Length: 569
Image (cartoon, rainbow, N blue to C red; front, side, top):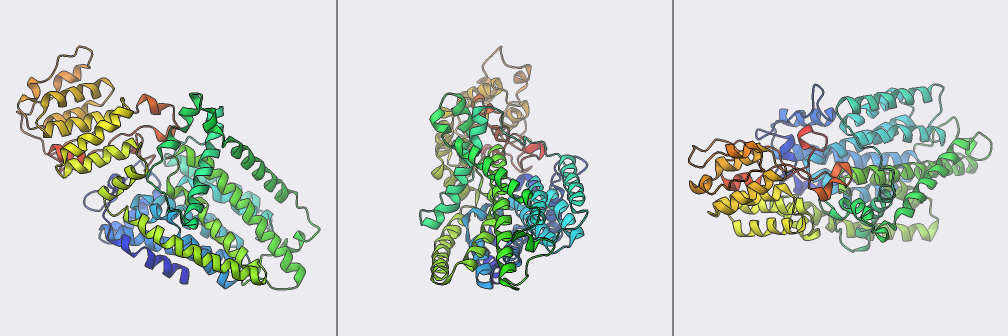
């Protein structure tokens, strides 16, 4: 309970934050959730949670409060599971506090669109705890709900099986069949709501090297705040996005972490073999057929030792499985983003709780002292990271500062600057994007909007012509044409024979401006098409209906190429 209260207090500032970035693709101007997908809403449990928020008023405050409460519940579940596996009260509290204070959780909590990861983690942890407590029906129900929040919850069914095989949950006849049915139903649900993968890296050197690189990235961001080295976190990590392309281009030195992938796979295989190989006898068999003590070590010394071994074996297997999933899926879907770390953050907290409980004498005192120091380092880092989600401007300014090569972030920052009338600065950022990525269509369309507002119709038309030749959708060009308040716009149009016939239909500014406009859209630049499929280059979603000026058109965030189908937000 203390850990949950700590999480609530820590994240109180986020209650005043507005919607940012992909929040606008999920929630309309009236505070109602947008049902992405087909008959079944994409990630239906997340959508249902948004419906609850809308029923309670639909303000950003309500949405953020819901996320903070979910995170408080997550920290309480970490403490509860740690106690269930034999940790003492002080150790369980310390583990929960370390999870609550870690800046890797900020994106999932302070960003409303991160609700998917938060729900998946809460429901998954609840399913594991219910399975260990022999509440099978509840465990399977929570497993299905977790999969309905995000497909990463598919990892929970194997973890539940490991709990039974490792001796931390009572083994019953029919457990394997029940888990197989629950896992199959979860997979069917994920496919039904439209999660289309990819599910595995490309079978080539670059693809096999990517998981090791991703795992090194998350290990760095997990440990760096503990070393007072700053969080170093961002909303995107272009180095990971371009990693596969660099390796394919011959940068074998950049693939050095590939050995980590092989090591990880071997470790998972060894742990799984160890668990499956236990056939009774020896100390581990003492915990077969019963669950662990609910309030820490108890019984005779042999039972306590066996329970401790079983708990550690389960935690090691769970952590390895989570690391493998994070390394593989975390590199295919928005590589390196912080919220993916919720796959491993709870198990890290439980492991810390067990370690603090089992250490002897002076070592235990020293470990608690180090945990206190770590907490003092984590809280300021989390508070600082939280502030970057307080507005679009803060978000993209920070991202560009942390990752200067983040093209999407620069385009979005340019949109914010244009909305403020700072056209020169906006044009500078867009120019930097095009210097590095000359095929980035959204940057051409955005710069056309800015140049139109600056009274430079010839330059604006030149950018639109280039965007259209690179494959920009006519709707995005049409929106810019409607909004540009310059009679000379049409006169400045060059006659380019290679453009599609749609180019000839560009509206002129002399026509009455429409009440709405489409935000800049983009197709994937050639440089990004070889990157992991889930990191296809930015595209735009429709701007709010009220947008009727170049600045408003430019300010709509550039998102990802799959947002329109709901498979990325």
